[in-house]
Image (tube, rainbow, N blue to C red; front, side):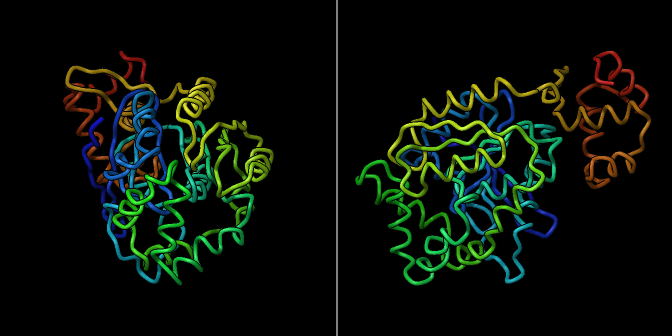
Length: 335
């Protein structure tokens, strides 16, 4: 499979976030690890196979957080953990998903969990793998802070070896890592790892924890404790790297997804295209008599964004005004 087209969205604080959308079906949002490159990742051994499998089953969204991959590099000294929520929120606003499965791999689990805690109504399911959450921040000190600060090349080599299934894969992975993140940005990101127990408070989304039997970075006990802590399903899959056997992993994810409520992710087919979940949400509020300002307040988005959605709805449905849009919503069971 060829790498997908890279698109960009600008965050409110001025960072350009690179993202890709591939496949169709239930929305599946892949939160990046501390190292990511939305284009080159498709060439990465093991990970590329996983991405193709996910895109074949779901509508897969991937993005590079600020300071990595194809997004804006050069993190400021004022960089905060909540900035990653801003990046994720900007991508979700652009793609227009109402509800979706959220996938956190590696250190991306902290970002995914925080979002799920804050927006349980949008996260229909949470899939976590390679998490540091229960093993604790101190267990990651050497990997995230000490080693990369002392010896960047040795850190890249160590990381590549952990991600590689065979020794022959290590040089290729190291080159991909070099192009994905710079030392200064990595160190600023690594300092922001949060208290794992605090992150888990209030988590209510149905969850799946995947543990790779051969993962050298985390013992099975850590995954078991995490699953018990958040009352999640636990699936152990085979594999000699941090990603694991793709067939077993996809079976676990598909089985989990089959039990989720996907009722609010349906799109409405119209003459000139498809109304996105966010456009359907706006159309429902139009039909309820809400003004653009009231819709913006209800959905926590800007009035300009609401105006863009309303314009798209009119274009796609052929409605000339809000009354005709309301009639359309009633005919199609949206309102």
